[in-house]
Length: 523
Ligand code: NAD
Image (cartoon, rainbow, N blue to C red):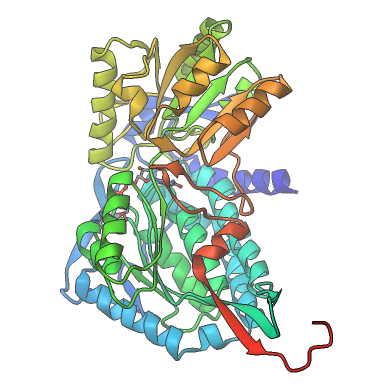
């Protein structure tokens, strides 16, 4: 079913996407484009920008200051649209709308069944507009259209259906108290949720946060990333079409130190959910402490870990969509190290980089000049610190923010390219001898987001799943995500979990209700 859908999407998209660029069929549904054509001749995205204002109380409005900021096409650095730039005053307006919609409005008072139906209708509408939304997402973020259309937007739809399913299944407990009392717990929505998201998965992050918040009956003020404000505005229009009452979801585009900071310190915001860098996460937590002690969940930086004890399933692992940002510390057992380097290098060389709107593209441009420069700086640091550059190591083409897929071998644990989160297409490969040693080295980092382990030995798998101090361990697979699987970090990779049942806890308060019992039969 899923693969049928994907192939029909590809064939529907092909005529649209195959303009410009020399196309060569390389098998298994993949077309490769010549680099020069890919970069010289950006394809006109098959979508227009319809919404560029702030969404407050169900209306698209200008910023109070009248200011706008440009959102750029990462393929060229050219302006896609000028978007209303929210600031503290707009956050005040958005929070007031969300507050009213929570305290007085229909959303938390609606039956859970009605809320569920709106979320399900929304999922259907997103599905109907899949390719249009995917095109906008790819235009603004630079990620391959195929990835947006076949993976991320369908994932977003499933996520909303999943949380719609939870809406009428949120129950408290009846508790046997130590005495003649009837005790129950009510799981109540927390109130106005402030949410801040990054650019790397704009809509997926929207789903992880807005989905559970709305299902639990909260209202929301969402600040999107300044690099990728567009897709959230488009889907929010659909959410209102599906029946969402005004004021329940408000979207403020804008910058972190202005709009983001105002949201975090707002006294009428009851909760903050943040995804972004560890450095910003600390500021967010501090703002909560200095304002109203609103609970904070943080999904922060990571330095994904890959551990190859055996060469297993590696081709699948290095398949096209998994390693969009393959900034991964890869520990490889010395017995398979040389073979691994050869294969990683060959795969990086084959990786198809180019215009996200061309079919078969595995890697688009980086998001902006800042991220592009940051990655190149890490690559220079890798070279200077003595790691061996196996392939890549430079920009790709002359326009936009494309970077060559890069592999470093002979990486040492204390090199910056191993300790920091590069967040770009750079793989760093380290050698290990035995399990005890690699566990100690792998855990010797301030991050603890996720790890992938490749082994055929059950004992090794069991040892590593317990020993690694990370929020997710993938065993003989990697980057496997769905709505039901919780995600979050140990250590400085975050606080709390998103997705799955766990995320509901972020958006619910527990109220204990105690009543005396007269002549209880069973006490
Ligand atoms: P960032 O922290 O600079 O920005 C993220 C968001 O925070 C943006 O919306 C930004 O405007 C806002 N922001 C910035 N300063 C702020 C402030 N002072 N107050 C409030 N908000 C502020 O992060 P980035 O570099 O844009 O995003 C990439 C980071 O996100 C990486 O570190 C990556 O690991 C992390 N990330 C983590 C997860 C996860 O699940 N743990 C998922 C995706 C991305």
